[in-house]
Image (cartoon, rainbow, N blue to C red; front, side):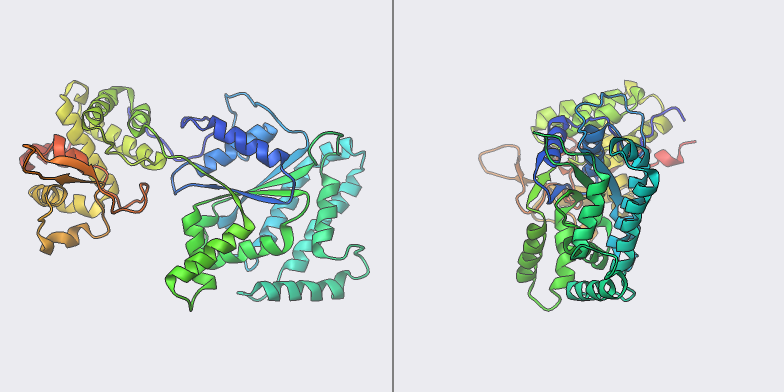
Length: 453
């Protein structure tokens, strides 16, 4: 294999011009007054995990995967310790917040030597402090699930009275956790922000609705502590819908959504939204192989002519599209000398293959299916009997036919709710204008790229 194949791993290398955003999030997390719950919102594939890793790297110079980054560490904060937690990995736990406490205990254990040295504590003392997190995990853990926040609180108080009454000087679980974490943090310095544990929680939106709600309830009841800052990575819309499914089973849809939004807002009132990619075509070209850069140039030139993007503004989707274009070009051979129209046809085939598999299968089986696709993207009088082919898909643009204009005018379609929605058929403008003159036979060789020996 001679072409480039990109993976979907997060990275510390900022390729999406988000350095200032990362810097801002890190500074707020390091200087705000705990307790705080902060969040980074982005659609799936928008790069949330990469941003969170870059924030962690900026805060401490480290990262959860021990990646050897080529970038400078930048500003690090001596009064900060970070913990990383992948929420979805523990969604099947009866009490997900217990898994978080156990992970905190495990990761904080790596700071033992540093803590013992800077705080002049013996290792035995530090290990004793860390065992307090284990005690709290046992206290909070409840056998039955699902459960309400009231049941969590009642069960916790009962366990505390039965098991820890003589051993705890503090009045509550929260007080005990606060004291335990305080003993693990760096010493306070005059004029500096208070020492804090910054807990980065990723992928809450990948949890089931029940697990997401149970995790947030546990977080709210036990871990909103005066020396902790939480930084959540999530698709806010997905988390809101998950909360709504649990708290509003008997309400109307509008009321349930408002209640779910209020629930999340009460927990987290400071959210950064990842900006859309400004130049998807340039990002796509960056991920193309050296031998296929000409395809990227043709796409950029065509987008300039149309004055509208026909690529999804989502890094993950662009990366997967680049992988497929590289593969197609490898199979077809000398595409670098092909004309720009061939490059655009390759893009159309790759796009539909990658993001609209059912359409591609029909098209591959019957090349004349292109006529049905063209009819859908080009006219308002599309055959209603054939609409089932395009269920769930939305056009980003429509062609407006006027008496005054010889050619149809392309307008942005306002019907879709979210520019990053996966159902948008982004490639439509290319089929509507630039390639509208092509016939089904013009694509046959490209459709059969996988059959090429």
